[in-house]
Image (cartoon, rainbow, N blue to C red; front, side):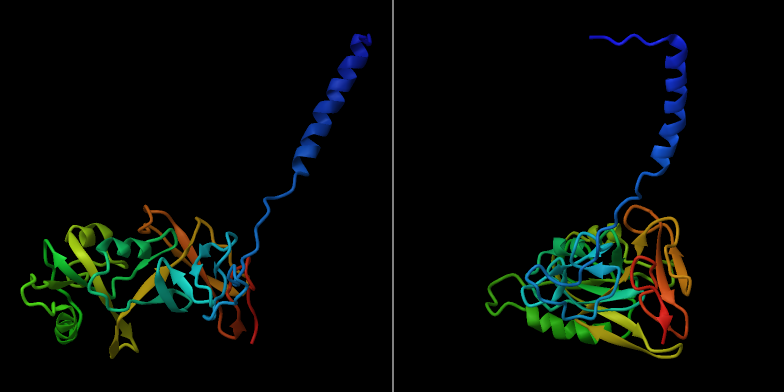
Length: 261
């Protein structure tokens, strides 16, 4: 059954529909942001003191793995701690760790800083390291990886670090590192600057610099924003938030923000 309607009445209805549609469209809800949980799937809270943007659920910009007892992991590597700009990773010395496992340390939101020296085994090419006292430490690791059966081929240990005098960089260059064509990733040494005049070496330690992806800062009004560009994840942009002096919190508008201390 068809209902006949005068042409003038039909025109009025079409005009009203064109006026209502933009109003309905404008009232559409904004995208829902999933919560960021720092509790493992087993119900265990993280052993590390994690703050936003770190966590274990898909709503966390930097989603970590976790063990059954609550240890945070990146890949299979233990997270020791996080700071407003870095993540400290424990790299236990292993002579037979596959070289490709380093790829777990290059993620969408983090990469190894240029202040690391990576210790490697059985590389097709060698590269000098530009960190102080690394030769002494290398000798200690060399004895660890020497085969007990002397009839086997001896291991050949080398290292990779960015050369500070040749160019300025923030991260370990992934392309140059993998061009060494190594078989094993032994461990890492990280340079930790105490102040402007002294530094210490963190053995079996690697530091990652982290960021949240995005072109615009999403920080609390009481936080400062550090913007980064040309990142190792494909040249994208990112940012970090840090509460100003006198305030506590993670600094992010999607996190706890900042509150007076």
